[in-house]
Image 1: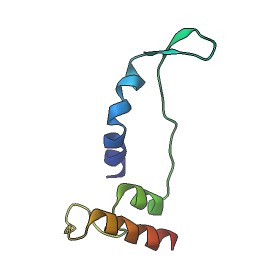
Image 2: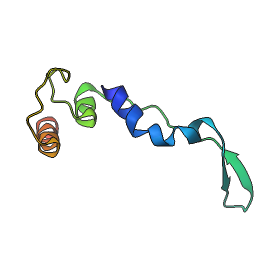
Image 3: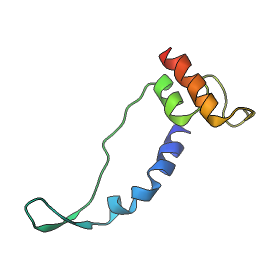
Image 4: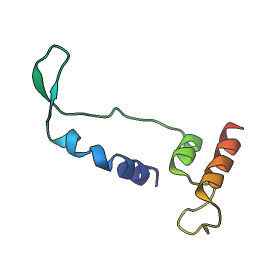
Length: 81
Protein backbone atom coordinates (compact mmCIF):
# COMPACT_ATOMS: atom_id res chain seq x y z
CA UNK A 1 0.00 0.00 0.00
CA UNK A 2 2.89 2.34 0.78
CA UNK A 3 4.37 2.00 -2.70
CA UNK A 4 0.97 2.29 -4.39
CA UNK A 5 0.31 5.52 -2.47
CA UNK A 6 3.63 7.01 -3.55
CA UNK A 7 3.04 5.90 -7.15
CA UNK A 8 -0.31 7.70 -7.19
CA UNK A 9 1.15 10.85 -5.60
CA UNK A 10 4.01 11.06 -8.12
CA UNK A 11 1.91 10.04 -11.13
CA UNK A 12 1.74 13.63 -12.37
CA UNK A 13 5.53 14.10 -12.41
CA UNK A 14 6.33 10.80 -14.14
CA UNK A 15 6.32 12.27 -17.69
CA UNK A 16 9.17 14.65 -16.76
CA UNK A 17 11.10 11.73 -15.29
CA UNK A 18 11.04 9.79 -18.57
CA UNK A 19 11.16 12.45 -21.30
CA UNK A 20 13.38 15.54 -21.29
CA UNK A 21 11.92 18.91 -20.32
CA UNK A 22 13.51 22.04 -21.82
CA UNK A 23 14.26 24.60 -19.10
CA UNK A 24 16.15 27.87 -18.97
CA UNK A 25 19.09 27.62 -16.60
CA UNK A 26 20.44 30.50 -14.48
CA UNK A 27 23.25 31.07 -16.99
CA UNK A 28 20.63 31.87 -19.67
CA UNK A 29 21.11 28.69 -21.72
CA UNK A 30 18.28 26.28 -22.46
CA UNK A 31 18.95 22.64 -21.58
CA UNK A 32 17.08 19.36 -21.62
CA UNK A 33 16.43 18.10 -18.10
CA UNK A 34 15.17 14.76 -16.85
CA UNK A 35 14.03 14.98 -13.24
CA UNK A 36 14.59 12.22 -10.72
CA UNK A 37 13.77 11.38 -7.13
CA UNK A 38 16.20 9.93 -4.66
CA UNK A 39 15.40 6.85 -2.58
CA UNK A 40 13.27 7.26 0.51
CA UNK A 41 13.77 4.86 3.39
CA UNK A 42 11.18 4.71 6.14
CA UNK A 43 10.64 2.39 9.06
CA UNK A 44 7.22 0.77 9.56
CA UNK A 45 5.68 3.48 11.81
CA UNK A 46 6.68 6.17 9.32
CA UNK A 47 5.26 4.13 6.42
CA UNK A 48 2.02 3.84 8.40
CA UNK A 49 1.79 7.63 8.75
CA UNK A 50 2.60 8.27 5.09
CA UNK A 51 0.16 5.69 3.74
CA UNK A 52 -2.66 6.53 6.18
CA UNK A 53 -3.02 2.99 7.52
CA UNK A 54 -3.68 2.32 11.18
CA UNK A 55 -0.86 0.22 12.59
CA UNK A 56 -1.81 -3.44 12.93
CA UNK A 57 -4.89 -3.23 10.67
CA UNK A 58 -5.29 -4.90 7.33
CA UNK A 59 -6.32 -2.06 4.99
CA UNK A 60 -8.18 -4.41 2.66
CA UNK A 61 -10.73 -5.47 5.29
CA UNK A 62 -10.72 -2.54 7.70
CA UNK A 63 -14.12 -0.85 7.84
CA UNK A 64 -13.80 2.80 6.89
CA UNK A 65 -15.96 4.42 9.58
CA UNK A 66 -13.81 7.44 10.37
CA UNK A 67 -13.23 10.71 8.62
CA UNK A 68 -9.79 10.40 6.97
CA UNK A 69 -8.47 13.57 8.65
CA UNK A 70 -9.52 12.35 12.09
CA UNK A 71 -7.95 8.98 11.38
CA UNK A 72 -4.68 10.57 10.24
CA UNK A 73 -4.57 12.72 13.40
CA UNK A 74 -5.04 9.61 15.54
CA UNK A 75 -2.20 7.87 13.71
CA UNK A 76 0.13 10.85 14.14
CA UNK A 77 -0.66 11.00 17.87
CA UNK A 78 0.00 7.28 18.28
CA UNK A 79 3.29 7.28 16.34
CA UNK A 80 4.77 10.58 17.52
CA UNK A 81 2.94 10.71 20.88
